[in-house]
Length: 303
Image: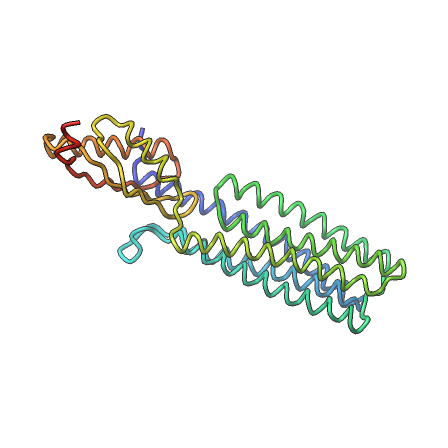
């Protein structure tokens, strides 16, 4: 049975509220981690730990950005935005990608200072303990965000989970560098950080690529498969010009079908309604289907 448009809108608003609650909880966790790293980094005069704390604050900043974006994205469609405000979530994902880039620059500065100027932290057991604790918190945050990102099909939560995972790898790099510095290899701090920098760049690229795909209306459904499904509807002679766009959880589809030219207007619309019902039941993420009905050519009609 087709879900009414009003019910779909209500479900989308409920989903956005749940995403905002997850982001708020993650924001608190990220800033607890950031404060712990910054406070201990400054007290212990550790440039690496302090830089990692700044990276965690970027995580918190991305959560604030996400909350603001979701507040806008959850608004229902209006005259100025007849397709809704969902793309603001993709814009927030672009912002997160930019923040990862900023964190990558900070990580590069830290690495160059270590390699070229022989700057490295003074290793203590307490420092390692604080970093280990924040590492466990970040791993838990990443798992929670990824779980709810898949559950709610939220591009923003999945992007932020990738961002937090970059913080996990930064913390692992700091812990590894602390161990090597303690073993007598002070420049290892910068070399490991440079390796992590490459990973962070790859994460940023993936997030930006996904967001750009949404904003540039990349096809969301396989047109060949959609046409095959459409052709299974009784009364459809051919299907062409299949197009889809939108976000993972809200896809818009339009296509053209040809029907028997002898059908009345009402009968042709009945065929179109059956196509719409089939596609929305086959693809739950489809929120709207526009079917353009045309009479089959004389040759097609005879066949």
